[in-house]
Length: 140
Image 1 (cartoon, rainbow, N blue to C red):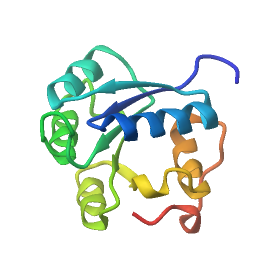
Image 2 (image 1 turned 90 degrees about the vertical axis):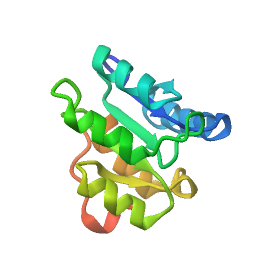
Image 3 (image 1 turned 30 degrees about the horizontal axis):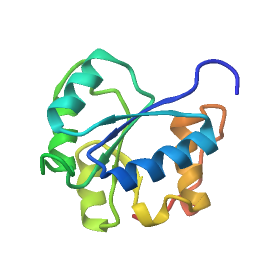
Image 4 (image 1 turned 135 degrees about the vertical axis):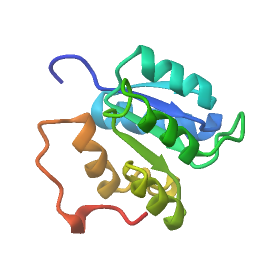
């Protein structure tokens, strides 16, 4: 991969899920996956650094904040509103709510290794990838 590796901020995942996401994104895209455990850490990190993608758990493991709260805070801030954010959740209603707030369509933890999820992530982590058709998108 040429140039800088894509950077991902992974927010609110437990250790196991963070490791799985890190392994998959590193293998598929050479991505550097960094971690924020709380809502405040996520806001601080995204205000100070640029990430190609922010992945947010539905319920943050450490502080119990919701992923929708993180998304709202990032959308309200001029410095972070243009940073792509995806909700990581197997719940379709949570995915719909996140998209309604401005998130990109996300994926569930159960679909992490699904080729359609990798293709969806490629839009943000491999910009040379062509647009993905609606039938290739994973179901939330």
